[in-house]
Length: 152
Image (cartoon, rainbow, N blue to C red):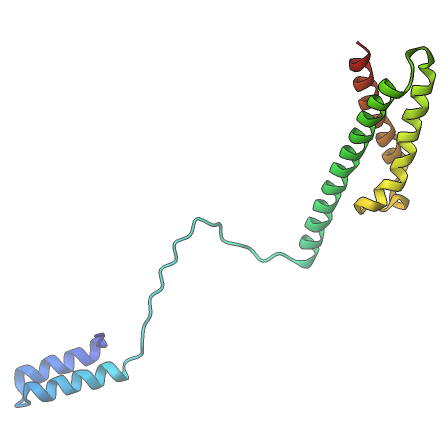
């Protein structure tokens, strides 16, 4: 039971000096506790850092940064897959005497990617020259390494 400090002094003084009974003192204490403002204490235990309010521009920049990062990962995984596929296909389908045909398999793997990127959620029209050079370079690297390992 919580009693406000100024009420407590009055009740204590009534016990000492007045002729009030203990019963009336208890009634006053009960009224004082009912009229007292209810206090609640909440303990929050958390290891999380306090969050700060971010502006809409900061949130938009963060979302764009995440989107760009995911697009970069997709632009690396797809050429790696097609380059490895082209290297394996060249080893098994192209005779070693006609190794020039393996380069046509590589070119086909590169051009097929243009149709695959919209399927994985990327807009091919937004790709610049640097993006296409990177895709061609990664496809060639994976093709050449896989094909070279299989030939040896």
